[in-house]
Length: 457
Image (cartoon, rainbow, N blue to C red):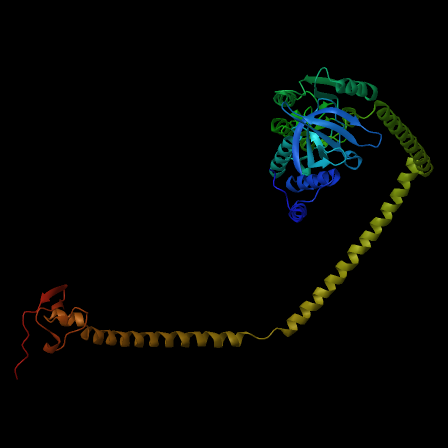
């Protein structure tokens, strides 16, 4: 028999059960849980089923070999993307994992999108840029000015590049007189960077052009990556002639742009920068020719005016000679008067001074007599004093000789000193086994003391 359930116990079990959720609440809870546990992250995959709605939102599927996930990029984010994805593109998306509640579909809300590998490429680009900046390869001081009138322009690019046709067309239109030398090289693909650097080195070694254009057309960052290699940058840095870099479009920047002497936004712009239009040169030459003609006419007019003025001033040679002869005669008379008058005045002044000097001269005869007498008396006194001084010096020398210690030593005496050089005057200053020095007349001797005995009274 079945056991009968207590109605009150059944009510308690119903009250203790978890609440019943609606589908909307469940989906919202799952969405919040996903957003909390999966922060913004980069996810890579291949674009599939890409749709751009009329609202501007992007809807697509991101897949790999084993799985796929729906993704959406709203218009507010999509407008900042630098490219529009296409079917089969490999991309990396910065996304928030969430759940689309109305359908319960797990999906990715994309915040940013980039081509696959661009993140690593951009990081390598920044690292190389910082390295070359530290070495000074981007310094403005090392940038060289372009030649004013280039005769030959070199081009480093691919033979099949559309940029080459644009450059040649521009140069032919602007400056047909300029000679063009092409250094062909691949501009993309494996090994292209090394070949570009080799082409630049060949152009630098040959030195057959005045300006070198390093160009290619636009493309993706992978297509332009050959111009972000260190080999290309260093080849441009040591190039013998100025280098203009025209790689990609105006918004594209490569390492080659930074190290080149001048960066052009496009290959066509590089050609325009390298060569001044022929019509501009012709207009400039015509302007200079007109200026030169005006200057010559002005100088001829001035010369004619000067000639007229000089012709009016010119007189007959005979009249000019007569006039100059009169001037010479007048100058001669003035010169004679100018020289004679000062000479006569000087002669009279000398005579007057001589008379005055004769009157002022003293009688020196008596003074000469007195001076001679003083000289004789001084000489006699000096002779007497010298004799007295010599006699006193001889007496003092004799006394000094008597007191000379050397004479005492020569008579058999000796000077005794102890080990410290002090003179020994009494037996008490000596001790057995002392070493003393005895200075004699012809030298010295060291003597050891055996014993000391004082003199007995």
